[in-house]
Image (tube, rainbow, N blue to C red; front, side, top):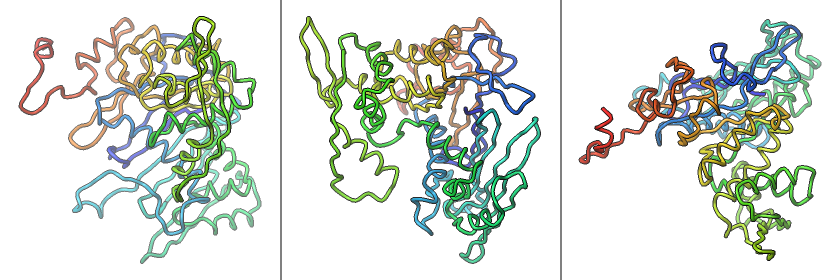
Length: 437
């Protein structure tokens, strides 16, 4: 379960940004929505199942999700797939060349709940190497450092030191051996998890198995369908739940046929993430079965509507989140699907009768119809605004909206910022906007 994510100096974000899913005490609306998460043995924390991010085109909404996506990639791939000496694949905030020498390290950090314990894990670095890494837990509400890593660069040579807490599981000899195998562009967490070190393995498994990020690049609708196809191919117990989501969008759809294709890639791919996406594209042949007046019509994946293809790619992630407690991250939730379907998906997460596993969904959107206080709480709404050349992430709560405030109207009138300029050089503002004042 994700409590919060913080990052800085990444793409369009220069300064620290944070998105929190901890329920705010000032927001008493929709009291049945927060998830009660036990932390340690003496307290519980209310966690939100939904977070929505609004903002203009090119403001940086996707970069919030990209930052979490990068952190996931670094945890999973830095030790096993990234080339020694190949850098960290990090895209930092673009600064004038005169300021590059003073560029601060980029930082990525999450607060997550695992087995009723709160963990804080993070790292910092630049395009060449990770200079720091840390893991904390909070038994009885007090911070306990499990390990802290530091890497220094001197004339192109790197020196890494790690300090281990007595509370970190494992033999000192084994931990020191793992430390020696930690390259400057790999994370100690990834090395330790591969050696089955308990706490590192728990955190890495959250990133690899529980955090589900819908592909933010390449052909997302096709590549993200692999997990859904795997469920359908084996007619697993979750098949009916997946089919139910698709039927909510198209009542004529009665079945999905999936056959293993296992086509070989026509060329060699070095990037492990891109390789996974390409393999996913070629693994299955998918067809949708519709029924009209008693007759069946089989439609290949490529000929199906973009909305059904989008839902098909999301379906396994939605079901896994609702039943198993995964955290699903989606860019432009409403893209290619009807606003009623976007609302339907949010309803599934907001209701305890359907969100049995206490799953979460974090998404960016332009759909202002979702700014409805009967659907979503004020502490679940976030905005991204780009000032000059850098982005800023902030919560709706900063504006202290009233309980009965029309959030959609307020947003469209510019009360909360994060709107497009609505003007092209030489054209000026549309008359309807001018009339709004």
